[in-house]
Image (tube, rainbow, N blue to C red):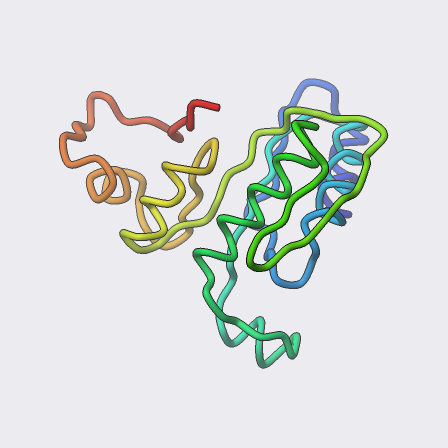
Length: 159
């Protein structure tokens, strides 16, 4: 986020976006506050992902459990905080009630490698990021009737 903010301070023409910010090491309300601060410099996209067991457990010492259900709640809390639908959320992983002073409809993208993650991304996110899977393969997995002529950069969730 810091590098993103530094880059945003030096351009008014380039639309920026984070790649994949790991969710376990940053609470969604903290992520929302950072995203709003960066949005003041330049509007863009925010990519959120689960990371992996080695990074989360071995490096950060955090529990890496239920990554897709956790991601689903994380995006819900983050979207509510950013888009100001409601600052209150009571779920399995998060119990929050936090007012923010402003809102911004920052597009939220999620990382996805496998079929279940791609399915979830299609349900909850404004787009998908995949660092090991070329877009045509990802979209063929998620959309069986995919054709290269209709190759999208991302898919949109109807909010």
